[in-house]
Image (cartoon, rainbow, N blue to C red; front, side, top):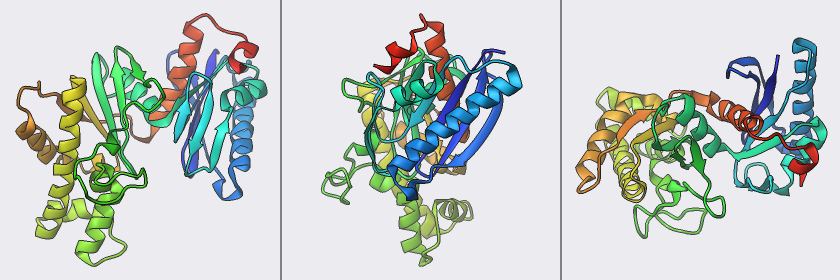
Length: 315
């Protein structure tokens, strides 16, 4: 059975799958990244994990994978197949595509984790059938994936979609990027967790706790939550003005709050629309499988075109 290897590398763990020609997940596996052992160990673990997946395919399906796709965090040069930088993993300028191609002997596609997840949401998830969408996962930080007719735009330098660094509160909270008042300092899951921990006096409280308190009518929680929603709406209306998406797909930890998030968010965005066309705002459909499914799509896209040789994809 023809299949591909899909790998989604996160800050603390890796998710992987063997994906069939029909998109079915034939086999799934997880492993820690081992980042505490340093970036070289992380790269070695990725290569070993991929080799194990290849071996499983040979044993179970009688042939090795035809291609592989890998999604990684941080700054990614998809054209050269280089993992340029990832703060959580500590690596710089890793030629990950060529390393994997040499190890596996098949063509390899390398993608940015959020753009890869957005590719999956756009093609087979909440944006299926939509020609223009923006995928925004609300997690530790906030990023975005700009979907255009079945593909995701990387930008001239690989930075397209960094909506989390739109300044929504000029002169506000300092951001590690060097600016002040960035969206992700107010509307990410980590920002809401910090704000609710301070407001509730419980240092262990997080965004999920805040959402529960909002649902029960706690006025302090409602205030914290609405401040985050307003900041998010300010960032989204900027994106809507620039990109004119038909659909906004909201994912990540905060999206798990359901209507507690989506009802006020839709209202807040609607109030900010003037001449713009109001997009549909929907929750992501694929959860934490989006990155892995997207990596599988990247690999299958390689096979849908003229299949290059290993040497060609390694350069």
